[in-house]
Amino acid sequence: MRREPFPRLDTQADLHARLLGFCRLRAGEVWQDPVRGHRVGVLDAAREEDVGVLMDGQAAQLGIHDPPYNIGVGRRRSPALFRMDIQAYMRFSRAWVFPAVSALDTHAAFYLWLGADQEAGFQPLPEFMLLMREVPGLVSRSFITMRNQRGYGTQKNWMALRQELLYYAKGTPPFHVVYTDIPKTLKGYYKEVGGRKTSNEERGKAGTLRPGNVWGDIQQVFYRREENVPGAYAQKPLAAIERIIRASSSPGRIVSDFFAHSGTSLVAAERLGRKCYTMDIDPVFAEIAIRRLERLRATGKTGWQTENPFPELAG
Image 1: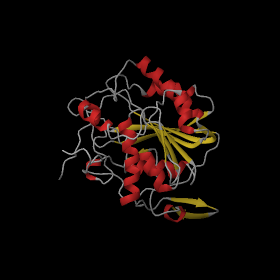
Image 2: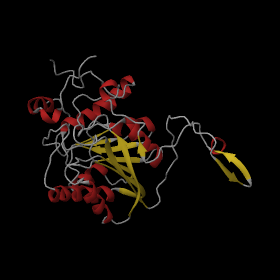
Image 3: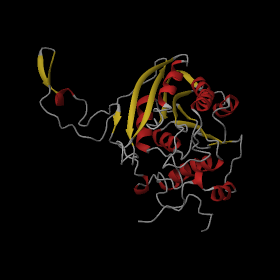
Image 4: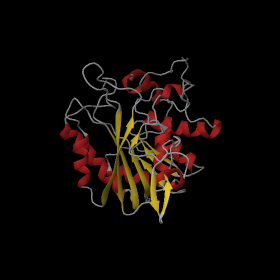
């Protein structure tokens, strides 16, 4: 199988510097999609004024945010995947969380991806949970776990194979029941309804299972999938983001994502008939997000797999 054309872009300073020359946006600028009204900015999520620039007076019905976890990936750190003391990390977190919640509509859902470093007291997960208790108007709804593609700690510990997803509600947001692709196989579970014994299959609304708060059916084996974005180091599965959007937003509404990275929220919103307002502090990833949307429209493909997102960079 062909190899990806790029290594992790956060660890390749020279390559990253070359890619900047192909980016249409500079710091502080916003691209307005002429087709559906998406917005992509090179902005800082921790600056309240930048959030205002992106939102442009609009409010999101759904926020999906995937900030740096304060944990290295593959035992490697970089300016993009930094590791700082927990007090400094929580100051950064506070700086972006409150503006992100303020950018939500009166009735809205707020989803937050996080990690838990089992070698550092599981930080930053407990600290973040305590921070979220301080945010006015939010109510905790669910604590979801998604399985990772691969893990660490295989020799002297259980493999760490999970990412955490916290779900909060502001007001009374919509929640639409969704289903997995996993068929129902359990038979013989009976319950009396209206004086009559009914089976689980009879009561069910679909032939497949509803997802719970453990998402083991979604995998991150990106290099084998069309949706792969070469060089991305924190990409989320399209199926995971689409599940959130289907469940917690309505067609035509705005989905906010203040850490665009590979542009998954943008692509998911496009496919599901929502608007996405997203930003990244790095012009390269803002450009990748826009190019991924343009590629979807031109070819129907959700990513590049092992092709080059920057074909003009010969060699």
